Amino acid sequence: MSGGTRAGGPDGRDTGRGPNDRGSNGRGSNGRGKRARVTLREVAEEAGTSQSTASRALAGHGYVADEIREKVRAAAARLGYVPDITARTLKGRSSGLVGLLVSDLRNQFYAQLAAGVEQTLTAAGHQVVLVDDHGDEERAADGARAFVSMRAAGVLLAPVGRAATALLVEHGMPVVEVDRRSGIRGCDAVVIDSERGAHDAVAHLLALGHRRIAVVVDETMWDTGRDRLRGYRAAHRVAGVPLSRRLVLDLGLRLTDPSPGSSSRGCPGREVAAFLDANPDATAVFAANNVVAEAVWQELKRRGSSVPGDCSVVSFDDLTWMRMVEPGLTAVRQPVYEMGARAASLLLERVGGGQGRSRTYTLDPELLTRGSAAPPAA
Image (cartoon, rainbow, N blue to C red; front, side, top):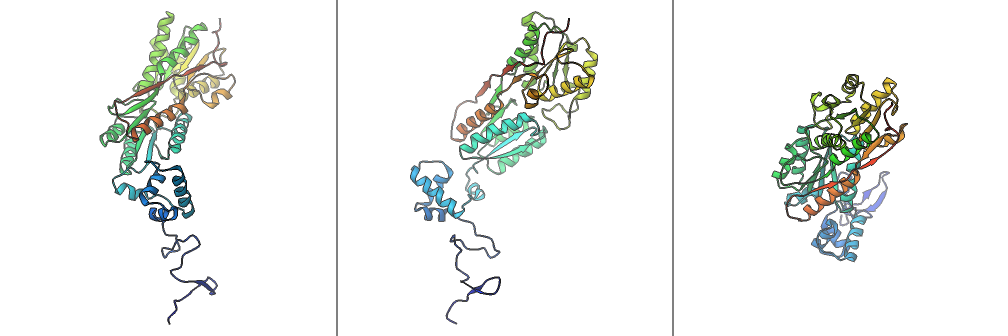
């Protein structure tokens, strides 16, 4: 038979379409009912440009006239083009993905941080791959290895150890640490002035007349905890108020795993309860982060203690629940979203070829006074 065979439809009727005919979008089938992958070459042909121009237009790197860029993107959208990251990495180029390692997405702090990172990087044409290491150093190192294997353009992380940062720097990958610093050379950082924030919070309590101010810090292995404890002590020195060691609770010395955000730590409720029992004369508590603040607040409420009548409370971190309780919790607000956005912008500079010595940006916190702090009872 000289004519080609004709394919029948599901009901056996002639569809009028030969086996090599294309669908309405001009794409063929791979034989299993799935649409064949659109190539960059086809996008270039559809847009009437060269393949290299189409590549630059879609990647957002290199010069392409705005009119041509829009034509290429429109052609890619019509054809349903999806970049082949595997092919790109096989050519020795970055995948364009950016890694983000955080300690605990259940903590609103890290959720806000991730939001600032994601919005900034997405606007620049990058996709974010998020890994929650649960505060475990080995998991963080596993995440770092995954980012290296996928040829990520760069990585942002809140370090829980030195291993992940060291591995990434060793592989020549741009790295920006956020909130904490590992001490590894060759990476940038964006942090909060924790010492100033703690100083302002404790100075506020001292100005109200408190002289027995307890402090609960989650750990002092990292600069965040150490700096907040320094700020607590500095405020006392400036006010000329003696310090008492028994008014300091370092949970990192009490718990089996002091890593920031460690899932094995849980809520430090028992340690906080025992600490308050041992210091009944404390008229105020400075909680050095939001997890600690929640434990202190819950324990005082469990006891039926009045806040601030029996005990004033100030937190480092300002989360939504602190504005919803009665009285509202006086807190040190960290510009967490801004910290994520600044870190992402710094990483983009490095990814774009920015050279020079490592930089650390320090952002200022802000004390927000609410009803949980008042002068001590007579």
